[in-house]
Amino acid sequence: MTEYTTPVTTAFQMQRQSIEQSQKVFEQSVAFQKNVTDAVVDSLDSQESAQRRGVELAQTAFHSYLDTVEATVPGVTPTVEEVRATVDEQYEFLLENHAETFENVEAELVEQTDAYDELTEDVLTAMNEQVGLLVEAHEDLEAQSVEAAEQWGEQIEELQDQVEEVQDQVREVQEQAADAVEA
Image (cartoon, rainbow, N blue to C red; front, side, top):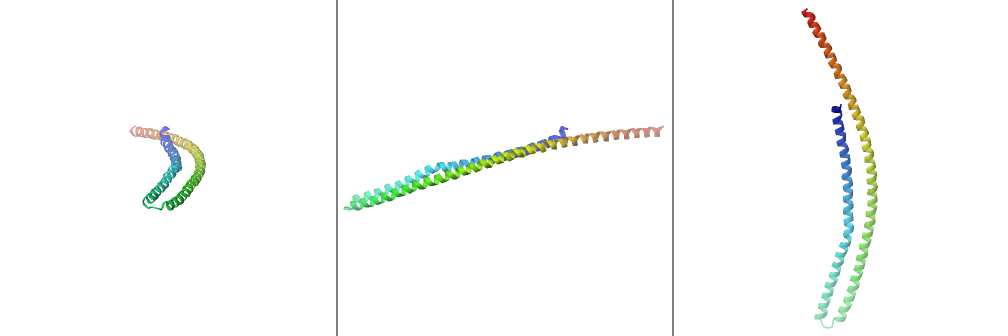
């Protein structure tokens, strides 16, 4: 009977493996997306720092320019100091807005990431439950299919036995007929 059920069992095992592998691939893709999102959030500090250094470098370059003007042009010191104070105020304002913008972006991104993580966790939980139910139903179907294949195999064996009996009877009748014809 195993000869009838082995292909059925193998097919069901392959189908279950496919379902379980698809589930793992989905879970891995969700984990990958989470890792990418976390990397983006983690990189915000580096981006902010790099941009801040760029702004500070521009401020330093402008100060160097003003120092050069002050050193080479006589009598412009009061004007240069006034320009320097105005520029410093503008850069300070820019740096404050820059920091505030990054804080807001990071806070919003973290909030959205947390909401996304909760949603994907809910989806994964629901999917795992559904896959569990699917695998259970699949195993039940397999058991029913194996039982049907075994019954079918038994019926074929019974039919084969009956055919062999009929063949034996036919052979006996042919032998008796042949003996009767010879006698």
